[in-house]
Image (cartoon, rainbow, N blue to C red):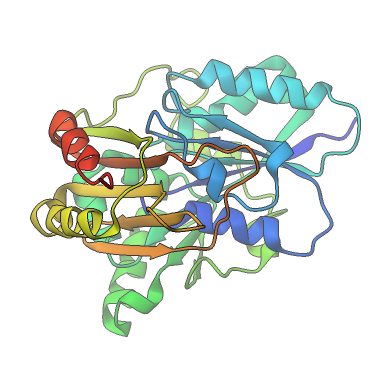
Length: 319
């Protein structure tokens, strides 16, 4: 019986995990992957941003995969390994706040999962511009780098050569075993992230002797998510005014935001996403048949006022 290879895609909020996932799924590899997407917010956004894999995406957005919904992860994988037909691999995109160790632990402590799957590697995406700050203020970011088999040093176009060399040296000091691949928009060769046979349990046990027995860990409790939804079409001018003010005044506290927005008079949804004050938007998606044209917007950050954000978002509705 051949074990199904599993790749865990991790990295802090906004590093580029979904971009990497889409890169993998868009390549002409001819393989069939099941995708498990875990999000921190209550409203799922990533499922709509993952390309061309509608029937194979399993969404988990009612908690963090490394703790509260780990039982769901085992249940989903249990269902996948019982399916008939070929499955070339399983890709798991964690939340940006996930500790990868408990996720990896799943593939060794659950008997059925351990028998039918093989953890091929942990791929950690880091944002060249923001990772140094994240390593200072986020325990999760440190764990993600330390636990990686491959580190995608992403968004290299946003920093100069000196800063990039400094960031890479910092990453190597934290994890001398991982292969570091520099990328823009996660444009890495597939063989750099899949089929790497990189997960070394012996090395992990040397680094974390309690890896197979550890049960508890903590998240940064100051980081929360606010999920907004508006059924009425949005006024683009009102939204732009509110959102520009928001990122100018609270940008340092906004670790990640992403939304699929329905503007009045627009035939396609607008995708807005960003990190701190670096925001991007586009109209690359189309509404699916039967899909609700409500606007969904998720913000993840420190000390967010959910009620005020909800009121401001509702005020963006077109008259």
